[in-house]
Image 1 (tube, helix red, strand yellow):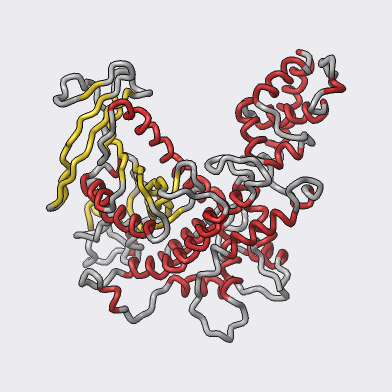
Image 2 (cartoon, rainbow, N blue to C red):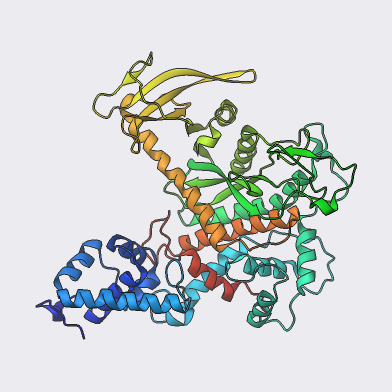
Length: 540
């Protein structure tokens, strides 16, 4: 059907049939040559499936397309790929991301089933076995069975809730055990894991006040999480995936819920307390979870979690998780909003248990003197953009201006919070989006003028945390119907554990597959999910 136009095809590095399949894949997936190269470079199983000896360079891909295929062949490939895509769409079999791994297909490659399973199981042992269900010692199932099962349920396409019949049947079918826990037993065990003791401890009164229920749940779940982080970091350090002091990023991600916080008119008593929302009298549900609050959208609600993550050139590992408590329109009085500075303070404390950090990047939502003060008190350098852009900077007093790049800096700017003051710099960098405007960054470091552009350019590392949230939500969080905060927080933390395990697994493949340790791991999260279906189901 196709004819090789290359005069020296017998000496070509890449077989012609493999080349044709590669381009069919490109156009069926609708990606550019750059993305095609990235996928083959980042995921070994893509080019292995095409039976290529190695991933071609981007230049080689372009050359092969122009020189080994005739115009008629190129048109046929595009038409065939479109037809494949239409058929796949009609049968609803188009999947996002790279192809999933079938372990049986890689025996003949450098990466074998044993490599894959050893890596995943090693990482798993460093992530989940620190959790404790607090059950009696003579129980039928050991603790790790439940957490392995929850990790399985956390993964995309593995059932919506703990009670899902489909998920339960798949789990039982894949398990080597003669018997697996009943879904109701599993759910009770998960709630029990996140439930703090009824009796408060003296250490919980560190600030002189009894902690709230959500704070006690936080402590109960994060204690084993941090033990797991430490063992994961031991693996990362041993394999050269972390160089301290490290760079970290902080951000907040929502986890939406869809249940309304207001009662129907039929469920309102004459003496019920009301609140005014958008000029309308509404009656809040008494049992509505206090940790759910309004999100950016007018009618959106959800939980929110803040994280601190290693970014830059090191292996991205989540070091800390902090619940976010916000006041809501349906609450009366002060509900105990967690300020941005408190969130940052708590995350820095968590991270310092594990890693020496020298730079912290936050987005514009953290543009507050309290946040800057918290980071400065921890002897770390912060880089935080201001909420607004500046159009004119020429009339700013004390401005040092670099004529070639157009950057500017003002030094010794005082930042006060409570009774403390530290000085920093405000840096102005020409915007890449709005011509004539400047992005404005704050830092507590005295940056030489000629280094301003390079220093602020490091801010792009912060975007890794956005990819982190996307990966966790797409691959490692279940769809949960329960509004119980114990369930929600525990499941989110386990999702983060699985994300960390995924990152460690890719680090362990470093010597087998040439890979950037940041955003292009050899095993995409989608493939990793398939691996976990083989590894995280408990056996005898």
